[in-house]
Length: 332
Image (cartoon, rainbow, N blue to C red; front, side, top):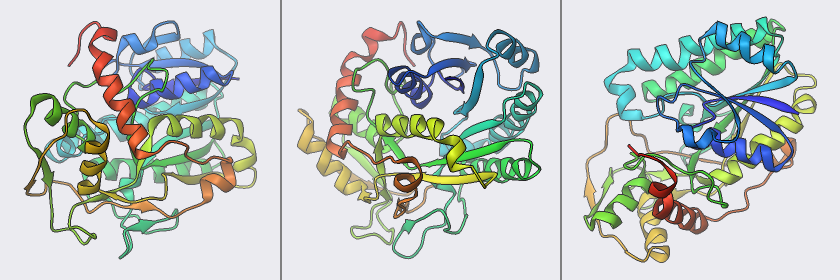
């Protein structure tokens, strides 16, 4: 089996590509390298360019007519940036995704695996969600994911394509074989900030401590990126059976365990050789209390369950950070 992976030189896309290779699935990578890394596409069939470039997509399918599905990981993902510049986020995440689907249809590719986000949910009072929970995105980034899901579902209902939307919770960790990991030196998510605090021996800021959670800090469902990648492989292999009678299906990808930011700090300090201290700070624009999944749909439909613990995710993130600069020719 051969698949096209947009954003396949990014953190998640490159890990999905590695999981595909390990499972006998051949990835073809399309990435603009705006945030992705050329090093992560080394030794793989790679095309540099934008998902909206119809000529490039035509070339890819002409050279790889046996591509059976597309995994669409390409997107801008930083919540505060989306608040500051929503126009750019709607252009890149929505308008260009629509153009991508037009190019896929023209080339006869009618299976789409979409990298969506659990940020689209409006959580229940207990902050848990399933695939039928209310859709209430709180940031422009999250709204672009919700809009894409609706857009793809409308197109699928017209029988042009079938779409499996994988709603990610919060990826952490790295490829356990250390082929790829988070390439940004100063990522904006909580674990990245914890690692930065440990490296610089500065306090870690818990942004928001007045949420309706057990300790007031935000709650997240932290899933190891390799578990996430394994779910993509399962989804590709089971795509036709999952979508046998449906045109589009959403599936949550999480552990089912909610971890607060304060609990994440405690887990980090159990693993890290350099523990951190934490200080309380105001919420960031676009932040929410968070959520965790209570769904078994991934297990039932994909035969998938997460294997790695939060401590293992932190350990792999720390190990990757220690070797990242030696793997990447330069870093940002």
